[in-house]
Length: 265
Image (spheres, rainbow, N blue to C red):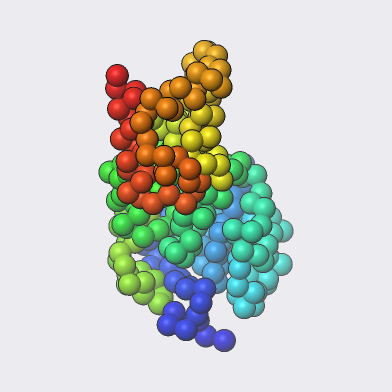
């Protein structure tokens, strides 16, 4: 079966530009001791270059039609293992590096997934709008989520002609490195915890988050004291009653301003 972007619900875009592929591999600085996970290997063009440079390579691919390319490749390379599954549903093995060019439509759930995974660096080809918004610290849910957990470096922009079929948007290659919450400013520490408490009401998530940030500073904040802080933030009650994961970007900006102003006092 052919892969046609207009009809394929998986939205496959295969990277075919050899110069971009070479840059992708070079930026990852692969070593013989590395364990690497490649998400969405496609037909294995990049996989072949990775496998010869690393100790172990895991391939995670949702589309079993690509087995005709990938299974023979794994049979020829005993350090390569393939997992046919949706990366959002499956376990991502502990590794040094993740390399991926996945559908841009699943960027947000993918970032939510990897913040809980054990790895050091992520090299990703993604939509240029997302990359630019993260770099300029845009206050939107996806950009803020990314900046709360990763140091982000933009490596290069990539033209649609570098893919087959061509995506409709400009792409970017970025590098994400996990950061410790001790390296974040106070506002980002609060939001980092809010993302972890995403299924809680904003009020309760904020109470827990202020307790957490004080703990990190060596202070003990009681539940009662934290509730008083949240009360004094003077946040709209309707917003406080919502779960954090469903609030809009406008509500997020409003909440960000309230918390940032608190720490400026």
